[in-house]
Image 1 (cartoon, helix red, strand yellow):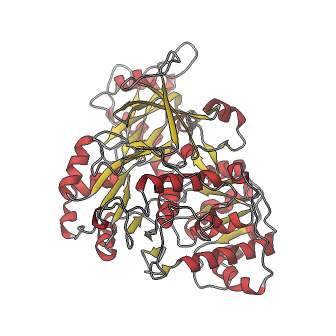
Image 2 (tube, rainbow, N blue to C red):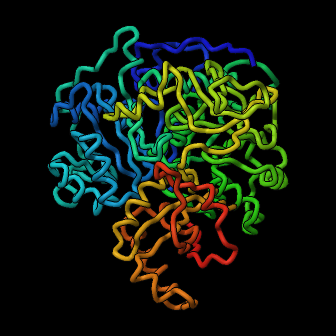
Image 3 (tube, rainbow, N blue to C red):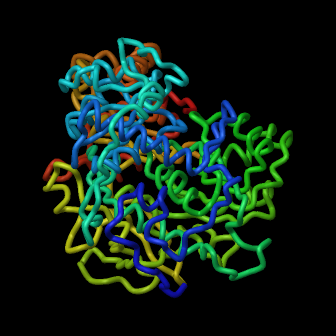
Length: 573
């Protein structure tokens, strides 16, 4: 499509742009006063734009009064999807602070690692996460007085361990002096961090991506321009976005896909977002029927369930008009199966990374059904080049590594200058993905980086390998992703046992001993890592890990060695 992007404002915070409507951008959809921004799927609570603005303001007032949160200080949110997730983030932005989002399923060790990177001044936490957050906060020296319970609904009394309740702070804010909002100068939004989003990046180690206010505003406007919001490009009944549309929000808000595509873009586009804290398939189906959901943002595992589970026939899904699938590739066969279930929808894929605010391409309005196997077409305001191994530029249909430039490309990795230099080069993002273009569509061939994607979640092999190597019976280890129809990929480990452990296995097949060893190794990972990092793709014993002369693991050779009778431990997440 022609690049008709009207430049985003570069002097606004995310809160000023999204909640206050500043910038008066031509793509902004109009929202009637009777259209809620959010609906809590569990309670049915409806929250309208003015209430979002009010709650964010009161949270900012409390943070300013009790903790003097200043410009550039970091606030971490560790919670399942929650009505106040957005207001906590936007309150932080009003004060000039930075929001670090972390997954609620992380273990105490994983949270400690992230807190040591960000060093937050305040943590908003859900009660489900307290058992992991409290010891992690203690290890980084964060006092419990700076931990706020996000789900203390309607309570004015302290939460567990004497923690402050968010509702109590909001209720008491009217008696406190008003805060002074952080105002950005022209151009300042481009270099002022709004979010630190977790990503393994292109090198496979955990990092925090610095996403500026301008990045967020830019991707929202780029997606709005691609969708031609407010333009009468077709009869109303044929448009992809219409007044009164409703999106189902099961995507986790700590993840870039849920944070920006759902929470920020859908609200900007005038939709109502039905927020649910955790994905449950039957509840998902029931909510589609109950709320007459029109838009779904999916990852491939949900597509598999929609295509394969008989229970789908028990629900009326006729309200669905548009499905966007991203975070992992969707096969052509699954696309066709989904169209048999939902024959009248707009359906296609998108592609992006945390480093591009979740989106680089999306299936265009000119295609009701995106090109099979394609990750869509570049968003307005996005430039791309494909670099072949010899450093020359690829032509159409030639494969090479994708580089991206645009307003959505993040600033770099927080506190990691070396990784930033390796990935953000002269204004271009080196994606680590091998692609080719054909007729404007982008086709992702494979990831050059070693990252494993489980249901859209990133699993760095190096993290699991490092943990496996501290097991007393393991001499060496390598982890790869193996294909799985439901999860996209599953982590699989190749293990070299120490000689004294391997000796009893030589020359015979002791099934019981091998089973015990696999179970022991599986538990070693499962007891320390989030569920999506468990070795559910299997565990295979080998005599040596193949490496090149510099010691790098040759994962391609490991994929070739996967035996049909691997005695792995398989389980659906």
